Length: 359
Image (cartoon, rainbow, N blue to C red; front, side, top):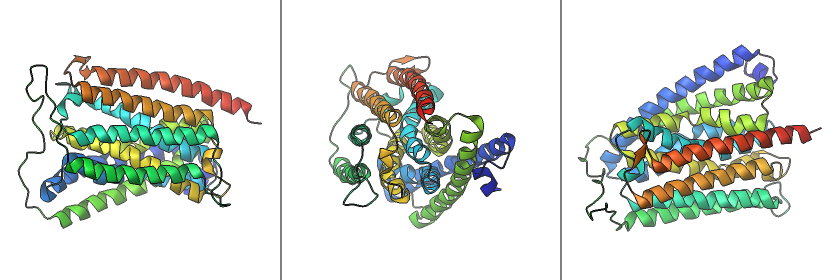
């Protein structure tokens, strides 16, 4: 059946059914994962932001691993790249949706740690490298098929991880509200848990395995839907497939907020974004027809710039820290949703122009 999906041998309802079932499985696994990660943070003494970046961010990105790797192996360069880049903007929009869901305070006003602010800035750095590589036109490195752009992104990602460790160690920034008092109580002051970190690690790994398998099914059915619906690989990958593979981040982030761990939720989203962008190197290594970023163009550039813009808006919210809400969300979240919807309109138009230009 999977081969039939890839070759377009199944009907649209069958492809859509497999896509939806896999999405539900990913959602449920992501919800459980947040609870395991929260208990892991308590058992190890790590901050929620760090666990979100290193644990949740990596595990919830497994569908993107399966999706983009499979697409690259099948020669679908646009689908592989735009799933990763488009997922960044969509996951930032997810933060705005979570802000609506909690409804009590602006989400960004509840995060006092400097490392979360640094993670958002690191996303801007990585996205700028990606946008520059696509806009300039990537070239192969030392006669291989791997492009310079993904190598630079991977190096920048490694540098960001090292910087994140240093920021977490020396986070002395103390945010205050308008009256000079601490704006929020740090959510890292919970009780120490004696639960076995090893056992929790196995539970996290098991959830990750479920997410990986379901993510693979999302990939295969998503490729079929891109062809059967006529939406094209670029737009479908950047919006619908990126949305489905972002379900672990959405479900785990909502669960983290319900556990009163907003830093775990934001660390999950930002960490997942950084990890996804680093996967461009894997995609480039698997795509043997030349530098993969040379196969994409204005659509991917705009998608990367949109992600950087949304990250910058959240940085402003984290710095400004005013607990002002509109329609149950902070001003920064409202701005992110409006910019994201406007960006989708631009991307849809670019997708149509790209399809029309192809022979």
